[in-house]
Length: 194
Ligand code: GRF
Image (cartoon, rainbow, N blue to C red; front, side, top):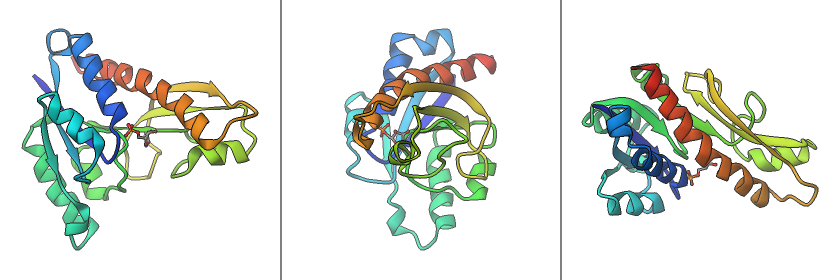
């Protein structure tokens, strides 16, 4: 069985979309894969309570309790590796990862970013797309490599930017597409690994 570990920091709506897709599409039978654990760097992440209620294993690792980024990432790897993951999924995990962490999970670490990469890496993507006068925005599922938001692209979704959009309305439109493409991209990734 391929274990999937999902990392979150907040509401966890992408994580929930992945967990629901895994159930509805019977990934355990059809793809020999299951979401095994959800790990958050924030104890109060809403997604964590939801995951617990689904009966998933959960863990919290507070980055503020560690003296350095390296020390946090080492402890995080130890937590993740308890679940023997075939795939580690970043779903709104708001931490920059060390090269050591990325190398450890090379080829089995995915992220979703709320822009049409390579445009608008980093934070505040929706306001930046509006300010730039973009007519289209979207989301990208990509492999994670050492350079932030730069790995190989697995899937993208495009949405229009409407004249009356605020960062919030655009974010909501993009997020609903994230919920569609992230589970799809993960299922395709699992299929490609046999
Ligand atoms: C998503 O827009 C994701 O792309 C970004 O942060 C948001 C997380 O939302 N990195 P959620 O926690 O999955 O609800």
